[in-house]
Image 1 (cartoon, rainbow, N blue to C red):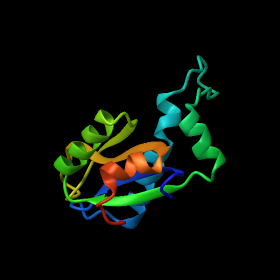
Image 2: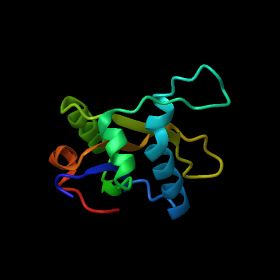
Image 3: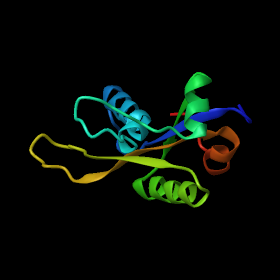
Amino acid sequence: MANGMKQVILVRNDLKMKKSQVASLVAKASTEFFLVNDESERGDELSVKLTPEETDWINSGSIRVVLGVNSEDSLRTLALRAEMAGLQCYPVQGKIFEDSNEDGTSETLCVAIGPDVSSKIDQITGNLKLL
């Protein structure tokens, strides 16, 4: 995958989320770039201008890799490094409810990096383990 295209989704391990919560967040993060780049003026359609990297990614199988990070600080640091390297990042904010009586606080739960060239993303995330 060194010269191919991929998208990496970073998910926080420290939150001890259920598998269904993780799956939902990963799906949202993976498709966020479509919504962020929507150029449609109508609410019932989506018009997205794709970058060449995004087009290549879609045409080459839309590879996604989900990796774990240990904290929100680590997540934010990696996202900042990715942005500084010219990669697009799409964070997903949300609330975690530890107890049914608590309101929870909004935090960054996961971040999608790319899609882009695999080797560029690997420079930021290559040392992380699969979730």
